[in-house]
Image 1 (spheres, rainbow, N blue to C red):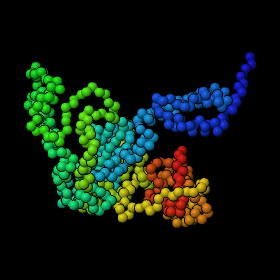
Image 2 (tube, rainbow, N blue to C red):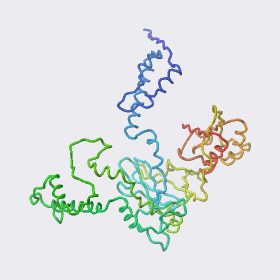
Image 3 (tube, rainbow, N blue to C red):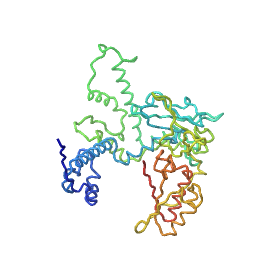
Image 4 (cartoon, one colour):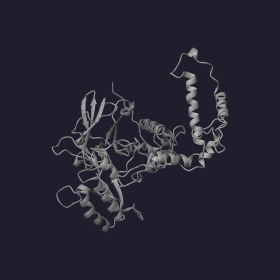
Length: 460
C-alpha cells in the first residue's frame, strides 16, 4: 500500500520587518509589568501578518510564554532591570571602608569556599568563608572577608565602625575628633532639651515590664504570672508617671492606635513626631566625621591583598576540589606555563590610578562608525596593545572623518582566534591588549577626539 503524504502550503513564514518592529517596539510591551497583561498577542500577531503554519504558531506562543515567565521572575525580585543587572556591585572583590576587602561569589553546589593567592601562599584554609549565614546563605552565595593586618607596634582601632578613605591622604577623622563628642553634638542638634531623657526613661519602662512579666532572673512558670493589663492601660500608667519629667518641647504620644490602615510605605501612627522630625535637618553622621585618610590606614595596617596580587577561588564540591577564576574578576592573566589562568587584584594607589580628563562627547549628525579590533590594528606581525591603538589608530580614525569607534573583542576571552566572542570574564578587559587603566586611557582619548565609544560584546 502506497503511503500518502499531506502537502501543507505555508504562507509568509517570515513576517515583514516592519510588522515585527511595530509590535515589539510598542511602549506597552517594553514597560509591561506582571499582573497588567501584555500588549503582544501571538494569535493576533499571526492573523495580522498572515502566518498560517501551526508549528510556527505554537513556537511563537512558547516563546511568548517564556518571555512572560522571565519578565515575571525579574520584576518579582527586582524593581527594574537596572537593579537586576547591578550584581557586579556586590559580587567579586571590593574594598570595604572598614579596613578590609570583601569577596562574594555564587556557587550553590559547593560545600566549602576560600580564596587562595599570593597573599596567603595559596593556602586553601587560611581565608575561607565563615560558618553560618555570615559566610554562606541558603541561596548559594559565599562571603569571604580579608581583614587588613595590623602593623607591628600598632593598636587596634578604638571603635569597630572606624572607616578609612583609601584615596585621599587626609580626612575628617585625622583631626583627632572623638566619637563621644560627636554623639553629644548630634543629640544637641537633633533632640530638644529633655527629649532624650524621656526616650531613655521609656526604655527603662520596657525593662520593668519584662521584669514584671518574666521576673528578675528570667522566664518563670505560667502560674506565677499575674494578669497583664492591655497596652492602652499600660501606656496610661506610664504616662501618669512621666508628668513631672515631661517638657513642653517634647512631642505628644497620646495616640496609640486609631484603627486607620496605612500603606506599606506610609505607616505613620505618631503624627506629632513625624511632623516634628520632618522639619529637622538630617542627624549628623558621626561615622563619616570620624573617617580617616589613606596615610593613617597605611601607617596602621598592611593590606590583606595588595595591588596586582594573583588569586583564585577554591571550592570543595561533591566531585572534589576545584580552583576557578572568579566570574566577576576585573583583570585576568594567563599562566606563564600554560596552566589555568588567574585573577589579578586591581587596586592601584591614588598616584598611579588613571584619572578621567574628558567627558562623554556629543556627536553631531548621524553616526559614522569605524569598526576595529585592537589586536590586529597595527602594521607589525604581533598583537597590538591599547597604548598603541591610542597613539596610532585614534588620530587616523579622526582624520578619516569618523565620529564613532566600535571595538571588537574588548572583554576577556579564551581563544584569540575567536575574535573575542568566547568570553570567559564579563567584567574584565582583554589582558592581551593591556591593563584596565590602559583601556580607560583609550576611551578618554577617544572622547578627546570627539569620538563616541562602543564595545562589541557578543558572546558564544
